Picture: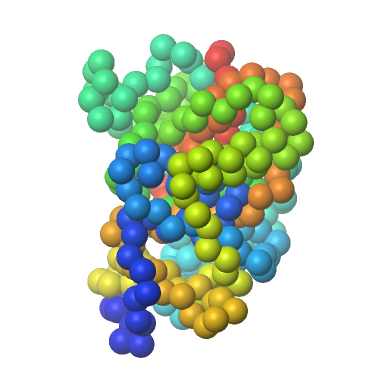
Length: 254
């Protein structure tokens, strides 16, 4: 796959977030804190799941089909609109960029990655990032020994517990950090060069909006998800080594 000759880039940033739900705003804040330039879209039209908004042309369809393999997205059971909770071992959180010691990368487990893909697509907190590497994340070990990668945010407990509180807090943080949103109708397509995603085109009221990315595109869902009233912990973008999929979770101490 190669660059579309008809694409006229109107902007170039490091990261594009395709909506203003928790995953999109958490990613935008993390990328901005790391010195990245971010564009946040606010989609007006949505599908049953956040993943199904990414339809596009034949190249985009082939890309998403390869990512989900033989998973029937339409048959995935819808997940609760409450933050997923993961119990973690506090001493197991280490810097992915060096930290106290280098942790061994977990062995490849195709079955586990496939299950994770399905869970993230079905979750309203799920996301797809078009690059596997490059996250400024930390290794986190779950209470059951599972190893994941996380980017945590210092979200107040009150914001997590109140209905709509997480959305409101993240929106306020984005405004405080001067991160503006761009109203769009829907994602039209991804743009590729040598099978790598190099940008995204949105449909807008004023016509196509093409944004080139230097790092990646985070495809995610809208706001409107609930918080979690029963546990206290850290809100995080959680992913797995070798996977482009992830979701927002509440990490609690085991």
